[in-house]
Amino acid sequence: MSFERMVLLRVKEIRSILPYAGVRKLHIMLQDSAYGLPVPIGRDHLFQVLRDNKLLSPIRKRYHRTTNSKHSLPSYPNLLKNKRPLHIDGTKT
Image 1 (cartoon, rainbow, N blue to C red):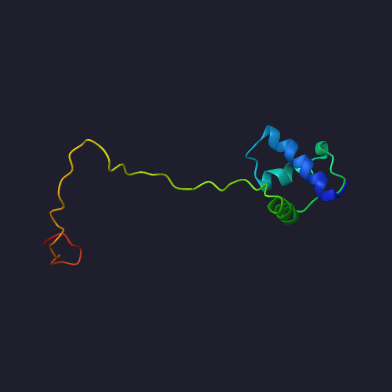
Image 2 (image 1 turned 120 degrees about the vertical axis):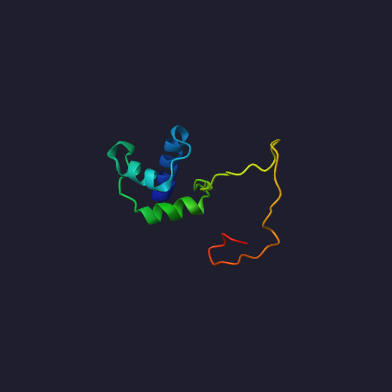
């Protein structure tokens, strides 16, 4: 059995318990002697092995939607839409 195949089997075992474990967490877990890898694997090599076998976790978006424009509350027109500010800070029109 090749080393990469052994790594993939261990990763699939871990992912059966922790489905969204990322590569960095998997790397730390594979360093532990409890998972029984005979030779340590580097983080970049682990990234490459998982990328080649399409086992990378999907990247989650890092933003939240904060504006809800479809609500039943009244909305008011923009009174300053067609006016130019007379001062730099824009306080007076």
